[in-house]
Length: 94
Image (tube, rainbow, N blue to C red; front, top):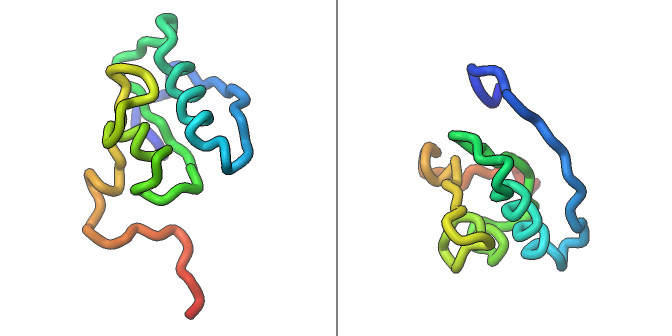
């Protein structure tokens, strides 16, 4: 469950998909969220970004480099509320 409150609005938008375009994906996604007609009091961005926490595309989201859209940075939920473990979603065999 994402929220104990009902979601007021759910939308989908196509974004570039090739892994080499992840930074472009982040920019497209944040530009979409930052559109003036979408200024909700709280924005929760969820997804499997297929990128390491220190990657450029994640750093664009978390403000560790200039953000994709000025004033739009996000907290990493695992960094904020995790238990200091790596937070892997798939265990490697080995």
